[in-house]
Every structure is written in C-alpha cells, then in structure tokens.
Length: 127
Image 1: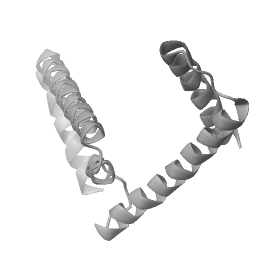
Image 2: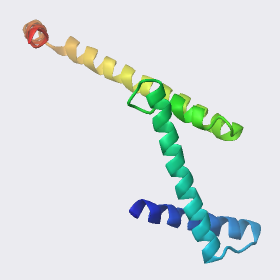
Image 3: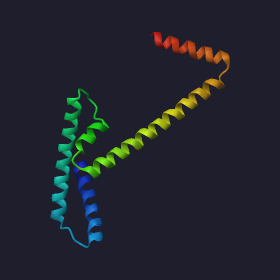
Image 4: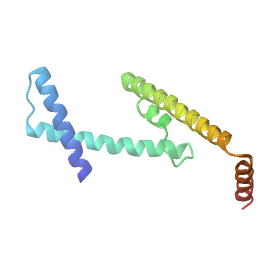
C-alpha cells in the first residue's frame, strides 16, 4: 500500500512538472489512472525479470535481465547500458582501492605479525 502511494505521489509530481512545462492541466482522475497503470506495469516488469532469471537458472536478477526487459525502448536500453557500465567501472575502482589498502596494511606489519596473519589464514582455511 505504501509503495502504491509512493508511485501515486511520484506520478503527481511528474504530472505537475509536465503541466508547468507544456502549459496543460491534469485532473485528479487522470493522475490516478496514470498511477494505477504505472503500478500495474511495474508488477508485470517484476514478474518478467523473475522469469528471465529463472529461465537462466539463477535466483538473482541481473543487469542483463533488465536490459532484456528494456530491449524495445532504444533510449531506455541505451540509458541502462550506460548506467551499468558506470557502476561496473565504479566497482572496479573500489576493488582496486581495497587491494591497495590491504597490500599497504600488509607491508606495514612487522615480520612476526605477517607470520601470525598467514598462520591464522591457514587455520581458518583448514576449518
């Protein structure tokens, strides 16, 4: 119910923006109808995404599933692809920073601390 209310609120805000921009008006009934259609379409999208993942024998929806869903809208597909690439490069940068931090931390350890950390890792791997 809260999700439906959030969709209705967002649609109302978007309609206000369009109304100001295009000098038109939206009735409360039309905003409610747009909200209802939007919510129903989102439910359909969610089911489709689940099915795409299940078809690929996965339990997690991936960005590839989302791209498949958006395939009929060139502009949306282009936007999603761009955002996916941005996220991927951002994740790579974060991983590299973590690697640098961990290697720096290892270099700052005394030889005795390094040996203890290696022994601790070996013990946890055996368990």
